[in-house]
Length: 105
Ligand code: 5GP
Ligand code: ZN
Image 1 (tube, protein in one colour):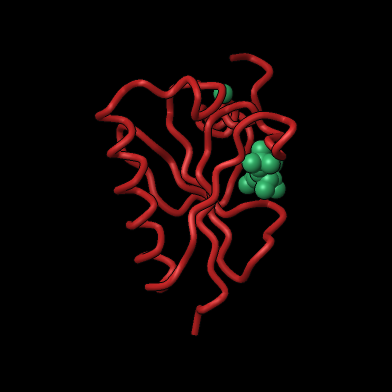
Image 2 (cartoon, helix red, strand yellow):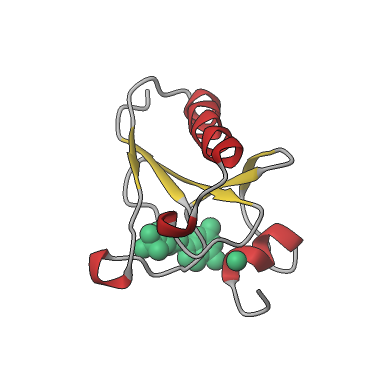
């Protein structure tokens, strides 16, 4: 998607504070953190929202990556947040999981 900000981050066109990357996902620090730890786990393929996610392998890779991000950030206690649809706060229509924690040392 040419006009998708997360696709541009994935392609390297727009810089981001990258935490983790593998064949399936990247994880970056959120540009406007709403907690001490606020990272985003983003699949490398463009999927508009969780409603369009059908690939079970990718589902498991996203969840594994959220745990990896928590480990990288040094938090054992955290929450995952996904906005689905603009009425519930989704702004970027490229699927992403928020990893949030305030229990960092
Ligand atoms: P949503 O409301 O769609 O679930 O969340 C979108 C998130 O993406 C927001 O927390 C926002 O701060 C973050 N975001 C938007 N643009 C950028 C960007 O260019 N870089 C980074 N790192 N985060 C972004
Ligand atoms: Zn995209």
